[in-house]
Length: 142
Image (cartoon, rainbow, N blue to C red; front, top):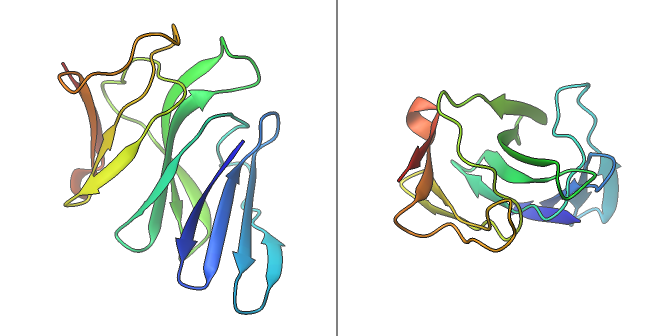
């Protein structure tokens, strides 16, 4: 599975069920390139979504890894200027969420929703996860 985000003439693709990858496609040159940035990058995962914020950062959140019972609740941020990943280490982690996690932005705050690890219980609006970019904080409010 993959997710993508457009940045001017570049389109970035992230994903990989068993292996993590980050690729970029230059629309004007019609060229593909692999973005390699060492060891610090998300592990392979399925059912991800992404969004761009502050015009230079892309965030992906949660999903499951090689097996559907290996669910994570991590937030990775990709910097478009230097092409590097950073793992956000929230002090109060959210519950494990896997597929269908939508991300919407308002004032550079991200709102997360999706399905809990039982694959039947949706994250309701009275239980919300927020990422406050200005202070680099991910919180679960319930």
